[in-house]
Image (tube, protein in one colour):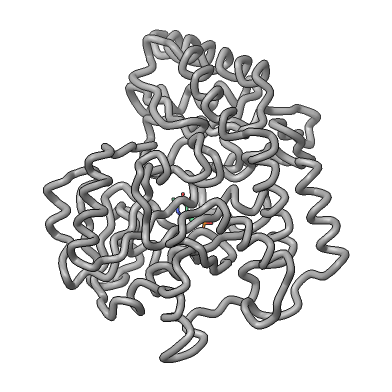
Length: 389
Ligand SMILES: Cc1ncc(COP(=O)(O)O)c(C=O)c1O
């Protein structure tokens, strides 16, 4: 098995249940990052496990995506459509977030006949060549150049820079809240200006909600909070309820572009795997039935109330997508390591080494959440004392 980190966590997982990861050495740790914003229902939710079991017994893969009518795909697409505005009613299922973004970029190029793309510094859209081309951090891009040509990388949340979007622009891709960039929330005004500039120039607006989607920020999708509707929406991570699944979503009219010149303009073998779709449908029902959107807000309130410490510069984010900004990278690393030793799994974000990611399952029991926050405070105390000695 390949590793891509010099210092992998290397925890040996025996099983996982609710907010807990059980290790082979009999220890258990609280999962405060949900497998990077995936396990929003916690691990092993019975409704998802049952849906997986049932669909696996009924049928697994039967045909490449889009040729046969497969009930779990249809039911899931219909259910998504009920939660989305009229311009986002058609779903193309993929395997992952990066594939969803590849599909979205291709769809935008095909619809507009343009090639220029606009993206933002600090963004992360995935690691395949197209998504990497529109991800805003040189250190991850440079070893793989040449990437896609014609990508303009603009400063995030800067209204003046939006002038670079013009009549040659096929699409603008952004995370409404940057996850890996360090939980960066843009102003409402910037979002509105972005929508307006895309409308003026005919550029399609793609929102990557791979990390922010499915209730993590307290609404099903975070674009609802900004009052701005994208032309194409991409999703993955928590969407599959723990199974691999992504999608790009747009209108019936726009999706005609992938049907012609040539037909089969985007093909995937495993995208929309029936077992993943069955799990996703069960997960979506749980989010609604167990009122997890409201829970995300309560998680935010509790974390903000408890995480008060002189070493904390800021806690930012929305709902259960939070980041704790510390004053330096060394303190951050020591705090994260100390917490892991004390049974709490935290992490960094890809582009920021002074930010501790806090993204627990939305189902985490409040006493477990409070206990994890207390462990963080004790770790900050200990890390501060270590620094003085
Ligand atoms: C905002 C965003 N987009 C896309 C991706 C890529 O998703 P995947 O790893 O499923 O390809 C990620 C992964 O972290 C992400 O955070």
